[in-house]
Image (tube, rainbow, N blue to C red):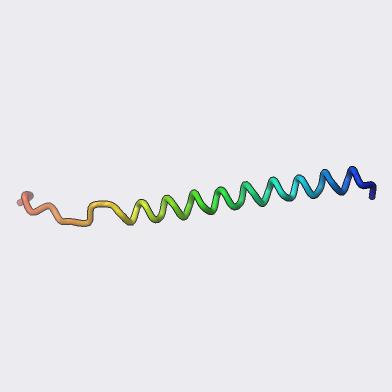
Length: 46
């Protein structure tokens, strides 16, 4: 394997891992924000 091929495969793995990290952070943020919703019951409804 040449040095160019090694650099390209390493860069591709790095990009994929970055995408995975960004996705995990987005999912965690969504779950945290959804837990902060209004949990009170509506007392005005019959």
